[in-house]
Amino acid sequence: MKRITTFLILILSLVISGIWAGGKAEEASTDAAPLVVAMELQFPPFEMAEADGTPSGISVDTAYALGEYLGRPVKIENTAWTGLIPSIQSGKADIIISSMTITEDREKVVDFSIPYAASGLTLLINGDSPVKGYQDLNDPGVTLAVKSGTTGAIWAQENTPEANIQIFDEVAACALEVSQGKADAFIYDGLTTFELQKKFPDTTRVNLENLPGTLGGWGMAMKEGNTELKEKVDAFILEYRKNGGFEQLEKKYLAEMKQVFDEAGLPSFFEVE
Image (spheres, rainbow, N blue to C red):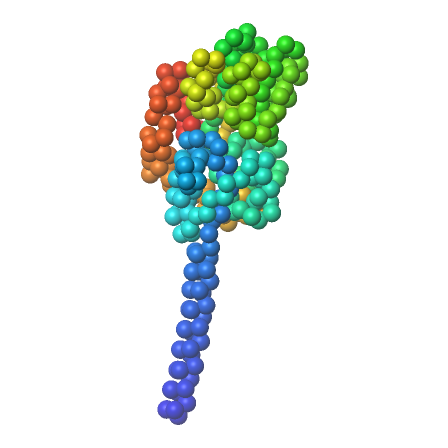
């Protein structure tokens, strides 16, 4: 009887150990799986690369903070803007953190987190152009530069049918068109137009007034139906904001820009209602 009892205890111990080990292994495997984050490293200081190619910027810091919150290592995938959404649809990436505005059209194909930042569209204008603001854009004599696939391109197509719209794949190409006088204005977010004007101070000027209806939230995008990840990402954003994470990023990367926005009476990027 004693030998049978000992045998049963041994079997029970092995079963329990196996269940525990199996659960632990599954948890460890989940925790160890890299969080693949897609972003286009062409939007400093949000998404950029150092001289050696190392990703850096606000979105990169945010991605690593999210990875720490989830208990997962982070892998940044530098992805062309037009390839961002396809990258999560195909499963090549888990999430997009790339200053992406939440729009109705995008919500049809991806799930967004709650907004973590907000921005509107502004204008980089050629110094000799008669264009002063958005009221002057819808004219046959006006040439606009826009980046393919952006909300700026969409806004131009919907609101300036009379203008000559030139579409480019790179921000640098749009800015160069304006600087050289080949385009009257480039429609993009305030941070970028502000920084580009500093690169072309003698040939361009900036209008930081948001184009009508363009102030919108930025979200982190995930594959449709991944509710588990979305819930965790939403919880991270709320906690990160509560703990001052976004405020610290603003101080680190956007101190000068925030001062300019404050003086112009414009909301900063992380003032999300």
